[in-house]
Each structure stands twice: as structure tokens, then as C-alpha cells.
Length: 147
Image (tube, rainbow, N blue to C red):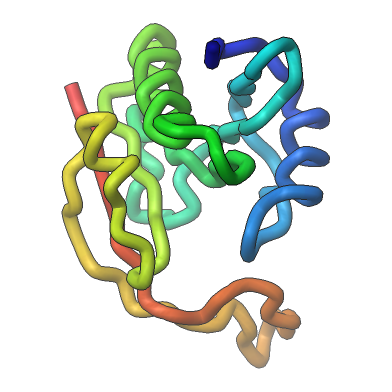
């Protein structure tokens, strides 16, 4: 049986670093939620402030990472639903997340989220702030849920 469990941001970040398919853990976060089966963590979600500055309105949170091991049916959608319920309880009015355009989005939709936009992938590297890209630069889909 799957159950939601509390997990610290530190533990969630470590778990993401070990299990996420294509991203490292985000730098910060507001909160994290764990998913356990038979007492063992099988997935985590990390929620933070929106990465896009245009969404920094004080009422919007972003699911910045979700990672669930293979073979856990409905695990991803369970975490997305839990993130939204927790954010609503904290007073947030909207939540966003991004998935790669090669992913179907079935789990996000199953949790009640709607696809809002296609986002062009790009590098964070700029002349004024050089960076090494360690993430996929492909296009993404932005999903949203709101009260």
C-alpha cells in the first residue's frame, strides 16, 4: 500500500539526486513530500517558489521535482495531488510544474492539472553569468492547477 510520509528537504534532495532520470535536486524548496511502500521511500516531490520570475506573485508555488522508482502505479499522480493539497492548506492559490515535451503528462492530468503552455527549452548560460548546462534543453509543457 502506498502512503504519503513526511520527508525533510535535505532527504528529498538526496533522494532526487540518486533517483531522478534527468535532473539534479533543486537548490532550495518550500516543502517536500515522500511516498512510501511497506515503510520504504519509493518517491518524493519537492515544492518551491516558481523558477519563472513572472510567476512570483506570492500566491503561486511550483513542483520543482518529482521522482518515483519504476513499478509504482499511480505514485507520481499521488504526489502531485498531495503537493497541491498541502499548498492549498498553506494558502497558495495556484501551482505550476513543467515536464519534458517527450513525456505524456498522464500522471499530472490524472491529478487534475491542466496543460497551459508549451515552453521553449533554452540554456541558462549567458555572457554575464556563465553556466554549464546539466539538464535537458528541450521544450517543455507547463501544467497548472488553481483554486
